[in-house]
Image: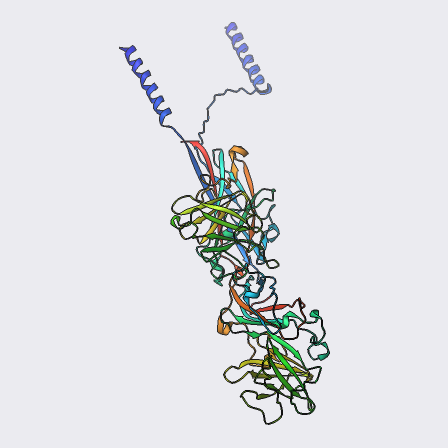
Length: 318
Length: 321
């Protein structure tokens, strides 16, 4: 009995000590872990984000080039520039542009809605200052130009309107009549016409190199003739002329969707080309500087809003 | 049996792998995004005139220089100018003025008899027609009274006289100096004097009429204290040309058609705009109009290059800023 009582006392004291130990002894964290593996597969997507969505040039004079100072929103780091960001998941290999254009000759219409601001756009790689039209469309003249000389009535002529500088061009539509505006000479004046200078207007035979640069319009297909212009005032441009009408001229540099670009004409260029620039990786961006070149003879006010389309391409397995 | 199944499975995986490798290709994938481009063009009235200069060569005294006399034949229309609306507003009016020798109202500045081709001004030779109409009129032709007596003329006493020199044709005029010069009377011969005929030389009362060798008489309307203007017709019946004639100090005359800045143009119905929106419509931006030019060289001009003249083209829009 006494032994049992002693045992109980020992047990009681032990419990008291245990209680005190629990109360006064700080508890250590005891951890246990297990892992969950998180796996994400990103879909293969070629996407770009172009900002700002809209650029507005205001108060431009006829014949003026609208630069950064003329952009209405000055609350951006580089007015007149766009940021093209790879927001997709693939490496972008090529970037190029195309622009909206007027459907018919706007000059003389007296309607600013007939002009298209997209046709005024010239683009340079960021901070290079080397601007090229994306794709400039000009029509032949609707009225006789008295101070111009072309060798005969079978010549169509017009001008490439580069803001205040207008370069006359002339094509001999009867040089090769069976080929409907193909394999014929295209002459582009060397000096521009503007309000203070007549410029190069003499397209008589034998003056190539002094008055004009002569090219041969090669046949691309039933619809187009083309010239790879590697010299003259529009060096580094491709020129295309519709067949058989021979009544307008496109000069393009950045529009790789234009007829013949990269297939027949190699003066056109990608704005971004992995062969020379590397690939534009997801999360990277590239900047394009934009100016607008307003020709003479554009009706006052807002011309029809133009659209610049940026196209990006990646070479990705599917 | 288990080994055979394993072999078939392995073969199946290999085939699938080969097919995957065979039919999986690298394709170009494109994506596009758009930026809207807006351009506001300022309100500007501007005009471009080309060519910058026109030279007529080797013209005879008393001849009319035409397109075939223009030195630069390497243009589509020698002797014509293109007036292009390079601004951003519709042009409603176009008119001209030309330089001339001396000072209107001061006959001592007359070039004839100086023996100096630099005293003559080619601007005073310019006549102008609308495109392809072959209907030429002076922009503004200035002539002074004679410095020397003309013995074959018959004028009332104390009348000043001179001639309007129209190439080889010279129309004599006589001005009554007895009253105010801005409202006086002027008589102009119907028949021109040339190297082969005297023309109208009798300016005495009684010879007025519309026939050959007669004169027409006009009374001036005051423009200012020194200048008067009249709507006139000049030439023989059936061949008349309508003009405005301004007379200053009774000693100088300005015959004009296309110069709407000339003295009295607003009072003279025969002056006209080269382009008038009321009859021609507006000249829209990018449009152009053509003017055909000729020069009429009077007799008695010293050889060589006369002083270069200036033809000024003035345009007006109703939206100018």
